[in-house]
Length: 232
Image (cartoon, rainbow, N blue to C red; front, side, top):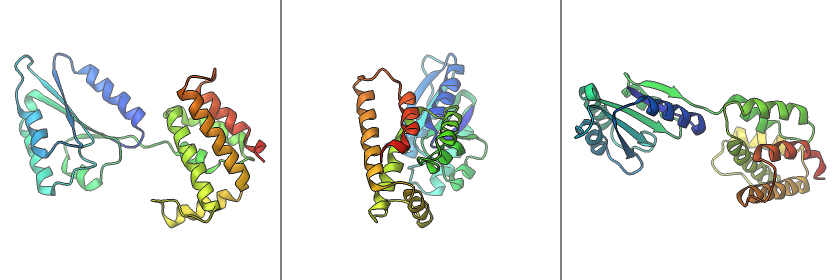
């Protein structure tokens, strides 16, 4: 068993990881923190035998997305895994997309990509007082593969970005075409509406974290979408 699970939809990739782990019966599970481990530590975790089990199952998290080793080092890692796979399995779990150049090195691995669904980005792009019915449909479609916590976090970020462009400030780490899209979307709101909406989202976040609301986060999101036009 050799897998690379990667992509921003970590909720779904975690479910897949847990399913694979549950199938690994009578094995010694070894976790490797890819944010601190080097190539040799991964090789040692995979290649060293177990005193009590016939098989080893290595889970290495966030190694490939942050690893700064030379291509040759990654090839050595790959060849070491290939040479010791008789009694060991390994899964690289990555919270972001792995570069194609890295994926190409691990050519015998089963690679599974977990991106956010397109409906999530459509939902964010359609956020406006006049798209309530469409927004609710997109939201419910998105929930099929994305946790409401993810949707809420991206909603908050989008409102923050809309406020920034409303004040002629360019949000960090976005391209020029994204800025133009945000500028067009911001025209659908007044500055006051965006501020009031941001305050509402902040209040929802606090209520959820302090367990002072009878509603679920998903219900709060639906309510917020339905009342977008009432912030004026």
